[in-house]
Image (tube, rainbow, N blue to C red; front, side, top):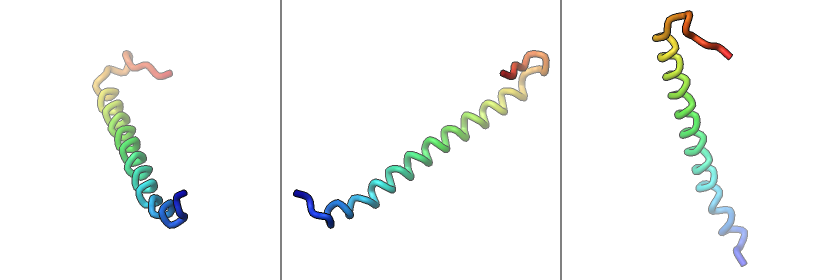
Length: 51
């Protein structure tokens, strides 16, 4: 059986993994939004579609 101290030592790694995952997803979302805005400026207004 795993003792309580062994389980509590894993929390920094769990929190770190969540933080890295959130940063990666946030960075990807930001890059997609920046790319979309840049591409939308290249289209003429009559060809832009907004849903």
